[in-house]
Image (cartoon, rainbow, N blue to C red; front, side, top):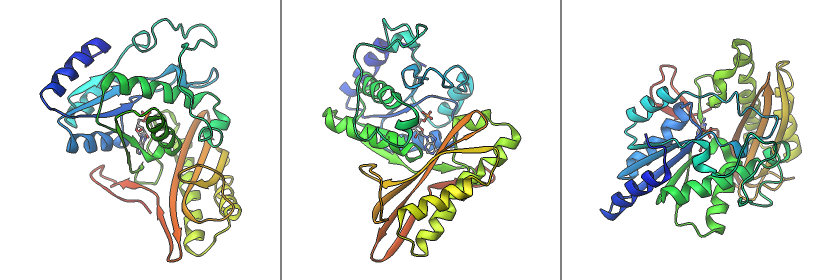
Length: 311
Ligand code: AMP
């Protein structure tokens, strides 16, 4: 594990000087199969695999779960080692944000990165400033690590769109690869926050996936009205008393602009609170004259071995 920027740079400069390529997986830790799938994708394509483990205070709002966010450094180091990761970069907060005292309310670094439009809707509405925090830390990490490729999960579809746009607009020399959303055997999208759910909340949370499945069924059956699709998904989620729907939206997969008609590449995105825990999930649908193809990601087999297409 490396904690200091200078040490990581020196190590990676030396690797690059020997012609090695660097693949990078940014994370906030508390690893699960979704993270590990990204590590495997990086391992398959690069000489050196770097995983960052940093719970970024800049992307948490004042009333959010920064202090309660799950942390498991020793478990994470073991999991990364098992995936053949070469370097885990786990900097302290002051190494990433020298001079910013996050203990004082509203503290922000003087320089931040902001991506407009893509961050207005979906989670941007409920989490003002969140994506500025994400774009800023990812830009900093790209500058520190200098990867040729960085791997992100489609579970965080809006984040992936924001990072792609940020890298393109800032001419950053890094390829952004989106990897499939990984689900538990019962369909719940894997998330570090799942481990903070009570047993009853964990059981209730599966309604999110069932809502998306119901939406997928009506689109495959021919529904092309985005409002009706939205209502189908929302209605399933509101059947579960422990789950409070924050939004269910149907947007264009590239621009994230709300849609009226279901056509082309469509993102159906959901956020819900289960107790105190905020969870997100999504599916993409490609719709053309031939019909609709739904992508709900991949599901781990009940044994934990292997991945297969989610239904
Ligand atoms: P996090 O540690 O939650 O910030 O996530 C780090 C990376 O893992 C991000 O690119 C996420 O999109 C990705 N990720 C988290 N959960 C999943 C999942 N269930 N399936 C695929 N990727 C995921």
